Length: 130
Ligand code: SF4
Ligand code: SF4
Image (tube, rainbow, N blue to C red; front, top):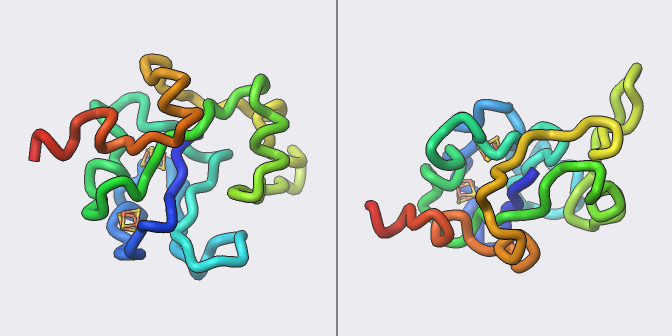
């Protein structure tokens, strides 16, 4: 990751089938004890090979998908200790933490936008184009 889905999500589930990394699960499949649609940071690749993140492109709820920190070893503690995530434990490879398994991220996204959890749609002007 990564990207994060916020409380403003209306649980339409439109983003789930769009994700090329099968990183998004409905609230029923979320490892958190809340009713939010959930993005698995250990799987999200920020759609680095696409023009924009597919989830944010299809989302009808402005600001529901926001930036989070890169899923790299530098931010291992952040992800492992965050209340927003439950990192999967693989049978053979153990905890799929950033230190154990880095994921691709968009290097052109300003770190300030990540720290502030800025809306992906607004950052990439997805709403202006529509
Ligand atoms: S940014 Fe791409 S890989 Fe990450 S959750 Fe959204 S659609 Fe999936
Ligand atoms: S597309 Fe947007 S509103 Fe719909 S489930 Fe995904 S994050 Fe929530």
